[in-house]
Amino acid sequence: MSRAKIIAFANQKGGVGKSTSVVNIAASLGVLGKRVLVVDVDPQGNTTSGFGISKKTQTSTVYDVLIGRTSARDTTQSTPFENLSVLPANISLAGAEFELVMADNRESRLRDALSPLAEEYDYILIDCPPSLGILTINALVAADGLIIPMQCEYYSLEGLSQLMMSVKQIKRRYNPALTLTGILITMYNGRLNLSAQVMDELKKYYAGKIFSTAITRNVKLSEAPSFGQPVWYYDKYSRGAALYHDVAKELLQRI
Image (cartoon, rainbow, N blue to C red; front, side):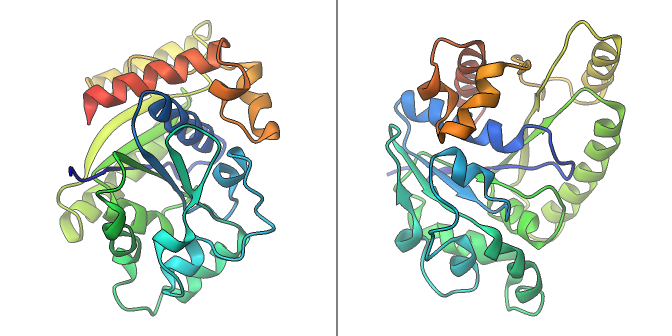
């Protein structure tokens, strides 16, 4: 059996479509026949609820896994979506930031927890919180690849350079195998000059790393989370479903 490819989705800037990207790329990979585990390490739990899993009723979450109270296998939940399981999160995870500060092997807790599951899945996608704290570090230490969802804005460019500096440090200290799988442009509006300018700037420094499909704003993408469904299941004929399906197919070529 081959080992799962582990991909973290990170950006310390919030509201860039990170959770939306994880939910919809995971669903498309499942439809494409890949066994997928989604790991939610964001205390907001948007990815958890995006699959229709109630955050309030969870008796065991990724928080319990990180502090060693339970195993990842026992906490993982199946979903009604094809080939797709979730390791859920809720607000209790916010406490992990403090509890892990003094813990042994605090940077590698997630990597160690996921290791026994590595042969049961083809892809493990990790949704990170919008920060560069211990939870995101855990995700990057566990990951083979990093996808950065970002908008075409100048502040996003600044944030990207900060994130890449953090990635360099993590590569040097904890995970030399970590690579940048790709930069995914979200909420794209090609009619804006600013979008074109930022895209040109990105191509200068990250040529070959930008996904060829950019995610444009789409009503169905915005509606799907309130129904607890990935957009492919909410409306597979929508523009948003088609775009994320294309990104998933490109991801299969990248890693």
